[in-house]
Image 1 (cartoon, rainbow, N blue to C red):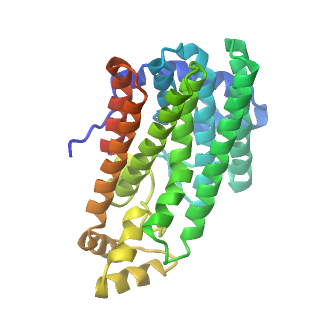
Image 2: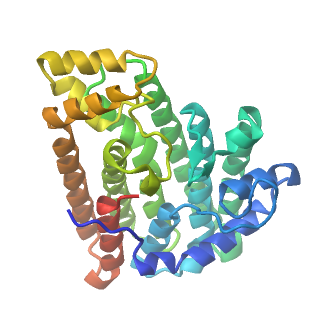
Length: 344
């Protein structure tokens, strides 16, 4: 598999505009919370001094804006939606770092490590509220009230799915009977729901064609599944310096797809070893290497890579179902390919 280490150029071209929109929204937040929010976004250090810290890839706002362009819309009209989906993503990350006890985010201490868990929860809650403040700016872009109301409902339903998915993810940590189908249902909610609403809303604010919006929603959902499975593969076999995440998924006993597959399909000593290791409170040292060996022997890595490819091709099929011209679909195809092959 050929690896692409950087975002396509046309994706990064949106970053300045998305950041400017996000800064307007975040800088309108209460001053007591602002430092935490700006720190999480990578715009300043913990003391409030501007810095050039690594920030997110802006995948969700980029998908939103590409979908807007694909249906012939003006990306400036969809910018409030792009900001809203990134703020929802940021809310989920701040809370996720607390729930997973993740020490680092983008090679820096997570918000909770610097300000404590209670204040980090406040910061995440603020991000969530600001997402809806951002969405209401659609009114200033000339979007009709009924479209704003429906957009709000679409985003809210995606948020509920995201929260349910996160609940299931945590619930599965303490169980050894999780099936692949259980896992995929969780991933569809935790990850794919927000990517799906990003592509759907980008098209919806600029299009009256429900068939196109529906197809782009399914495109985003299938792409989200491929994205999550790729993340799972990197969480076990990726390098920490690439992912920017600490420790990986094995020490925290995360029930990612390769692990679930391994628990379900390993046999004999391998299955017994995996069950014993995942019954421990932590997995450390040589036990991490043993987990990897068992997973490799079970075919878990090959299975996960194959399934990610399947969801990627289903995403492309949904993109074809939009009936849009090839030139309009091309950027969405390119970012889909990047998300499948990324190593960070």
